[in-house]
Amino acid sequence: MSLNFRVQLYCLLLVFSALKGEGRYLQENEVTAEGLFSLLNSEVKRELSKDFIYRRPLRCLDMLSMEGQFSFSALRPQLNCAVYLIFEPSEVISVEFSSVDIDCSRGDFLKVFDGWFLKGEMFPSSEDHALPLSERYAEFCDSGVLRRTVRSSQNVAMIFFRIHSPESGFTVTVKKLSNPFPCNIISQTREGRFTMVIPHQHTNCSFSIIYPVEIQIQELTLGRLDSNDTPAKRSAPGCGGAGDFVELLGGNGVDPSKMFPVADLCYSLSGPAQLKVGCDSAVMRLVSSGKFINRVTFQYRPLDRHELQTLKGNHVEDFCFIE
Figure 1 (cartoon, rainbow, N blue to C red):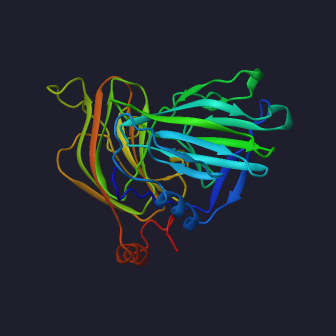
Figure 2 (cartoon, rainbow, N blue to C red; figure 1 turned 45 degrees about the vertical axis):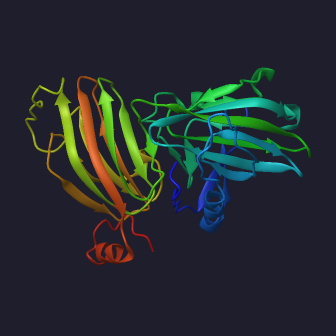
Figure 3 (cartoon, rainbow, N blue to C red; figure 1 turned 30 degrees about the vertical axis):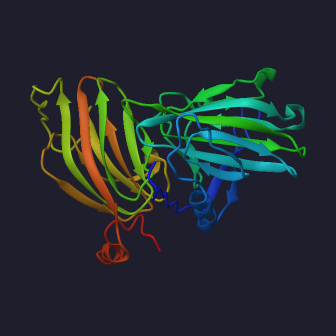
């Protein structure tokens, strides 16, 4: 885990789940970016021995980016709490509840969501996740049966909880698991390089960067059965009707299905293609028909203030300016 790990979240709203019965309604609570930064900066970053288990108490609003055992004990009623979990792009998250002391009959709940809610939106979007929304929640009070272990589908997950009685709480053990084909990722860092591969799967994968960024596509391979085959020919310009393509999206939320298209490519290329996205969030989204092995390699860096002002002055991407 990098010592300079930062995730700059330009957010006005954190959405907390109230999930009751079959209906799922979201409550919105305001939080400052400075408050969220303090949670990130307080996380211990160090190399731990194999046998050492890192432990610390949880806060009502918290973020975890490392393995360990974490406990929450309510000093007073805590009605809208959430813990954000984020690991490396090539990792998924295992959440195990080793002990739980809550009163479900009083309205207490403890749930894990496979993804993130941020700024009133959801990542990954329903279009890009393999599970329907109802199956992305693990309800720990359902039918009075406690499900002990939950595994995420990507490098981010959330824990929602509500506790009415003082001294009630729970303990959770968080572990990282290797993911050979990462899909639907939120970047931990302000800049980096990444290769996204979809091997013969009919699915969509998104890489989300929660900053205004410059993205350079260094290599794109579409419509290949293997490394020796030639790309499939496209009969028409643009990506209309193409089953395999990559698109760059921009917006002020995190749900790719609600973002604006900046550019799309449905043919292979080996040279660099560079684009600047002056939005709160940028997403590199790879769409695959499942017939081929598709791959895209790109690098990204944050835009500085001068570059943002230049974009605004040129009236480029006026749908997502940052004031």
